[in-house]
Image 1 (cartoon, rainbow, N blue to C red):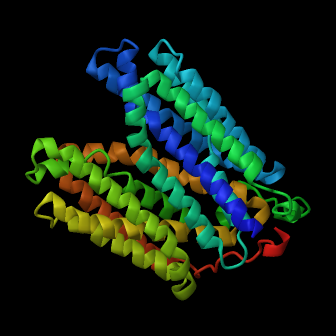
Image 2 (image 1 turned 90 degrees about the horizontal axis):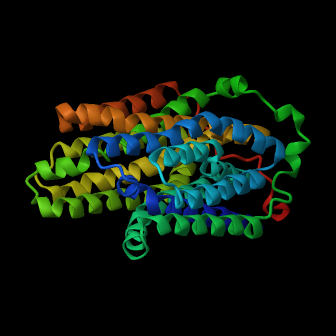
Length: 404
């Protein structure tokens, strides 16, 4: 079917892009060292601001790129974003000073946003009843890519060098551009949107839609909790008595378990929503994710952390896909780009704030991070169960399969 071919094309492009991005970004501190920065504090500072500037600018720009996508089409906006990454990543291979890396990362944030746009495209092309499946399919690729990227990047850096690693990443994005260009057929998917001027709404209108602000808060909270583990999990594993030489391996395994479980959760979301409705599924899985986080406090050894990590990962995967799907059902098709842009802003703000808060809490007590995460997830469960006006059904305004 044509809609599935389109779905596979944007999923493949997203997977290639997210994998390529994580080929080099984890090794940015080593790259600054190669550029002549010798002080550890300076390396940490340059790495922090360079890694943080891109999501910060992307968070501001995502709604506006989404608005352009509503007016001019999703495909050309995704091509624009991926193509910009080709040039920016290639440029990073030739920098000679740290400020140039920072400048290119800022430029990258200005033109980024293909992740949100591919989710919008998935919601657009899915036939009735398949929205959760389509969104979950794309989100799975976006989760698995970063899990594989650092492994591939480590091999590339060791064999070809860090500078050439940026050129390899640029080639990944070029491949993603080609996949979208020749694999995604936008004809028919959005031809009904341009003619429906009544669906062109403002950002204020979007925020006033039923449950939209609540779902933005849910997405922010889920991203906040999901990203809080990065700064403290290896330290927690070490604190459980794990030998120092085994800490990186066990921490890596736990991160992989979380990513794999989250992928499973993305695929389970559609079936659960069809049976129970979005409100129940989001509330219950937020509560279940909170119990998974609380399980970290009860673990006696690092290996036992795999069980609560799996529970947490599956629950986060389900609730995230359900939140995006529920939001898509209340956004008019002509404003989905803007709507998903706002949702992406909420997600990126959570991504940017979480490591900072987690690091500050972890400096006093690592267990305090898990306590705060569990309480936040419990609060989300209560808010959704009490404030979500109704459980939105999967979107039904997409074109029939045969028209796509």
